[in-house]
Image 1 (cartoon, rainbow, N blue to C red):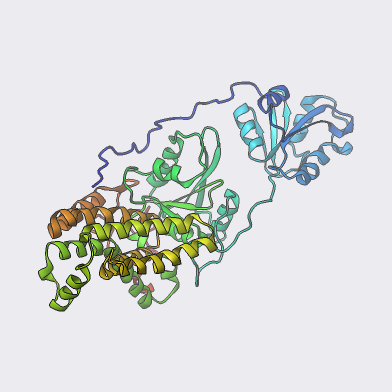
Image 2 (image 1 turned 60 degrees about the vertical axis):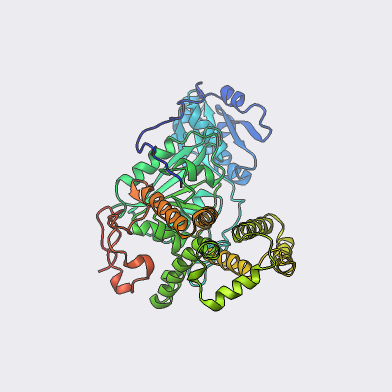
Amino acid sequence: MLDDTVKRPQDVDVHPLPDPIYNCPVSPENTEKLFSGCADLETRRVYAGGTGAAVFACWLDGVTSGGSVAEQVLRPLTDPVRFAALKREADVIAAIENGGVYGPSMKKVTAMDQLADAIAYGCCALVFDGAAFTFQVKTDQHRSVQEPTVEKSVKGGKDAFVEVMRVNTALVRSRLHTPQLKLAQTTVGRKSRSQAAVMWLEGVAAPDLPERMLSRLKALDVDGVVLPDVLDSGLVDMPRSPFPQLIHTERPDKFASLLLEGRVGLIVEGIPVGFAAPAFLPEFLKTTEDAAQHFWPATAIRLLRWLSLAMTLLLPAFYVAVATYHPEMLPTKMLLSVIESKQSVPFSTAVEILGLLLSFELLQEAGLRLPNPVGQTVSIIGALIVGQSAVEAKVVSPIAVIVVALAGIAGYTMPSQDLGAALRIFRFALVLAAALAGMFGIIMGAVLLLWHLCSLESFGRAYMTPLGGCGGGSTGGTFTRNPPWRHVLRDPAINGGDIRRRV
């Protein structure tokens, strides 16, 4: 099993970004030189009030809204009532600072780094020698908020995160109307310069969690953050482990509920997924729908997921061990059925199971990569025609097909795709262990897997919390869903002081 004995430094900037990146003074000439070769850069020299001092304006076409630039920046700048009498550049700067240009979100920048980031991020800039004023006029042409596609919603919210960070933070704030919801913003990626927002509830989240998240974001030494994998491997404590150590969600309501539990959240520009930490193994077997229905059916479904986890992980290995080394464990009629089905099969049980598991993975990958109509056709052909033909040709036994199919279906019940992928990897390992040493191999493999899980940490917290006395309070909500009147206290492992969830 995997071991990661070298843990990530918690609060040290391992790879601090060079500061400044563009070491030159702010000026119209340097701005044009910096964006030379950018055909989408629009520049204009506008005279304040039509007859006053010249002002250099620039923005990126397509990233900004042309109508907003004209209406909110250029129009007030050329208003003769406001600026016509201002002949000196210093007077124009003072007028802009005092609200002469009424574009929203005005900021004064004096470093070329800040100016370059603002223009690239959708601002219109009025550039002078030594200083510039940026106005947020970002285009609103982006994918609209739609229903979740991965995390299906029955009773919960019908909206999902999009690629625009500010839209996503607004979706979260629409559910948490409190000034306790704090947001810290930073930039990640040397080339992409992606904006990242760290969100938490003050007093609910432990104070060290936002500090850890911001520290690790600043230490993230990558060219760009355009895919979630960069964050999955760059922010977690033990990146070599295949088990997920960040909670992913495309649903704002689940993201808000995670913040209410005391976790810290992360939203990155361009990624339509929210991240939350710390992550504990039981959290990956819960869904938002559990809290949206009565606690009795929610408890039954949660127990079924834990049973499915054990089934998808152990059932193929258990069948190999019993059929190869321990046939006395089977009832007589079932043993006779297994022997009869195996008589004409030329391969051993271990080879059968490994081949079927590999075929199952190939079919799943083909169904994911092909277009939807073709992918469904491939899945049907593979599952029905090829599988049935293999049984009739005596290449595999029917019982082996049933075992692999049950394990695969049980794996699909995992709410987290990342957890399901990790379980499939260890399922192969346990089958090999069963082929080598039978039940003793399964036991040793399961012990090593459990040891690996117990050695994992997520943002300084034990990954198996609250199982095994890891300091996370009661295990009552791990396998079952507590009634609302018993769901009173937050998890003490991640709480920052406000421990009561309800009176």
